[in-house]
Image (cartoon, rainbow, N blue to C red):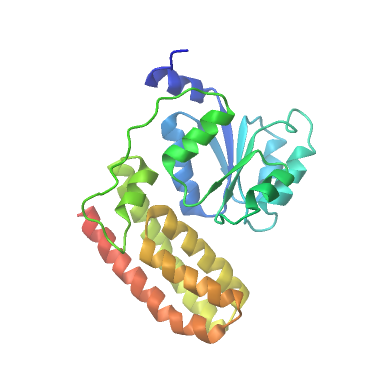
Length: 262
């Protein structure tokens, strides 16, 4: 069977309504942009409780479900959605997870999900997965060059290109939103460290880590991940000491983004 041309493909996707449950606003923005540009209609919510509520009020053809969310996580939300009538027993649900550990896929399947994607989200992989579950044929995208100019430890431009699928305007918009949001979160992190609130530090730094890796901010993501590991072992002194590294990474990432935008 001959595959559809690009216009037909976009029109086919435009017939489908997707639900995205993702609490990280940068990750949400990345996924929304990728899906909208491909032609999909997307409604986004910020946690599992909202996901369960919205599916009772609207019809969706597929759900993208983040695993680690506040209030109600992705596993619990999926189980609740599977209990609903009106076809939600069969609706495809894709798990979005920051982990790629042995047994994760099986855990997602046991919770009632159909498949899963690991973060950071790559544009082509996301669309391929969604198209496959909705049985939509598509053209194979042009490969992204393996070696790109302006490679940087601070910003992984190869990763950024894969996320944006080559859309420079989206890259500029994404990096601008990312660094503005991260600077605000860094101020909040400083307050939480002074309060020694390890639980909230862990939650916030996990968000910073996820957003950083999503946009290719490798150095910043690595520093946030190091603090997250210190939180997991309840090592406050390590968290306190690593804050200087995090501040430096934010500063260097901001400078790199400003250079990219100019």
